[in-house]
Image (cartoon, rainbow, N blue to C red):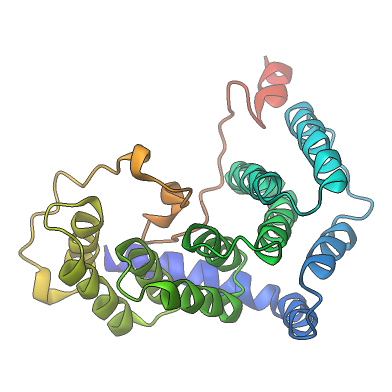
Length: 266
């Protein structure tokens, strides 16, 4: 298990190095306060001249365009901006599962990040939104910025179990193991016994700390999606890479990104 965890961390480190210059530029623009215009403008530059011919993605982009037109008419609409952030993050996660679409996944992730930031700038200063920004930022390997947003979320409630659970995964992913363990232990202290957050915290501790080696890991806890405020649980609960699916999918989706390739091969 330790080797598997390390393998995921090493992949994240390699990706971080390749994008180091890009993220440094983003950090500079953010420091100048050009949050939304920079993120959206950079996304356009990043994908300039690189359109997609995938029917599924084209249809999704048309759906997003309708929402974007509505938001352009009402730029202070927090709900629309957040909806677009969610929409593009879901697209990004789908793309990241296919090796040929990783770059477009990054493009969608940056759009998602930009729309979340627009919602934040419009006054939606909630834990749920800030946590989404922290997760999407971490998924792009922008760890310094992600740390800032995690701290901002914790400043609203330093004992929030959901934020602490995710923050622990973030710390583990950047090789701060002891801090991660300490953070998950705070979840055990604050979350009700038997709660989803407590169960997951104990699960992570059993995987990473000898102190909890005797904890029965099976069956693994099942997350109740109805309790999910928008948090990316699908990827956030995978220790080998909390935010991004590293598996290069060779198969295809019945109605998703790989549908056209499947039909062609038949």
